[in-house]
Length: 312
Ligand code: PEP
Ligand code: MG
Image (cartoon, rainbow, N blue to C red):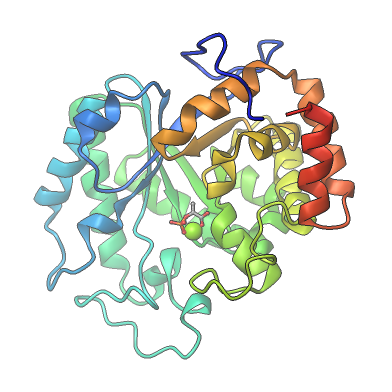
């Protein structure tokens, strides 16, 4: 059984012993006002691709500004984390040719597009900064597909130049997880993207369903990498969020908190179940559950060990 809906739990995410774990929303092109009505502490991942895909020309800075400002206003004083454009390769932009790539997942995607068309990111950052300034909102920006501390430093330089104060990166390439401590020294926060981190760690294409066991977010190798990022965050005192699908599974959410996640971002329907699970377990419980998952032989064993320990 899942955690019972006996006592309604609402408001900020916390463990049973009161340790805060911000519960945030993953958003794309949804209606901002409707999204803001959800019981959440803000937006942990705004996928901005919806503004860019299927377009013949780049959206103007004015159009981008209007979309960001509307969302920032809707969320009031709650944090909004904007992920800069994650396109290229298999999601080519008509207005920024990347050339043909035989292995698009390993190509010029995400932050790597600055190598071929830096102006697109620069204009996006300018539009986000203007919207943040004019609404007075709590805005964070983060870049996808950052692989090295140097790329993290480059992005921080661009974002600060645009006037943005809170700058982070998505950790979704194994090299970034391995050097999380060096990356965290460059940025204000990181957010672990478990969807891509899983694809790149297990070398299994996430766009096909051919290898579901390898893409299982309970894979101990993936959890070891998340734990490495969590440990780096804890020792440097920097926030480590998780914004991949793994955060939406209440049982796995407990493990992620035990591995050092300080916030969890997910689609709206997952919020109540994760909130309830956290309210029933202490941080110490979460750490014990994480140890069980890390030690398991495989994803099935990890899930069963944790499920058995919590008694659901
Ligand atoms: C991820 O990779 O886990 C992620 C959150 O981003 P996306 O699914 O948009 O690549
Ligand atoms: Mg990703």
